[in-house]
Length: 267
Image 1 (cartoon, rainbow, N blue to C red):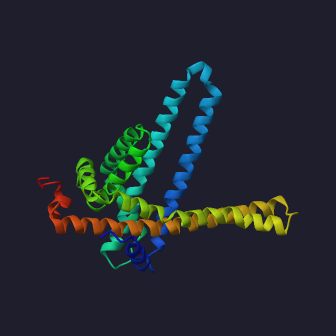
Image 2 (image 1 turned 180 degrees about the horizontal axis):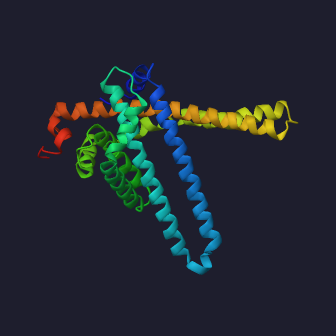
């Protein structure tokens, strides 16, 4: 039985004394993500300025924007795999993970790239059917990240097939579990607005240097808070993945060999 309350409580226990490496790794990825987003905005703005929709056509502009968004999403998904590998290691061992363990995850980039490409491609294609099919399929394929992070020797095709089997009758469970973290994320972004606002209201005549300093502090607090919550979230979803895996093994839907060498079970 899917029990998100248990998975979240277990995640808090698992991360006690082991949060340093996941936090540093996720902040590193967060910085890269911010750089990618800024570059994406700059490129799209340049397209608007240099090639107006009158010159190159609206369809061409949409195509360029779509390609940029697709490549950005692909790169972001690619960076997620080494992070997931850390949480799988935390789940399976009692020793603290090191930052070197995170870096070792990048040694499997070719298979991670194939997995990220397949995930983005299929979710994008399904999203063309009025968004909702894309959302459903994103949860159907979501466990592929854990499958490949746990065993990079599998092909992206095999990992996606296993993910679809794992999420049968559990896509809604995963959706509501994801939804249960929305309040935490809102709180992290709320601190970005509330901290400087309190200072500016109490002391309205702050000079520009102090204002910039307060803004930087509030931004840092958001980054740290967001990544703390994100680490907690991924650890909880790691527990959910192993629960789904155990369920399929108990029912005989999948075998241990399926997770190590690929699908051998006749479905």
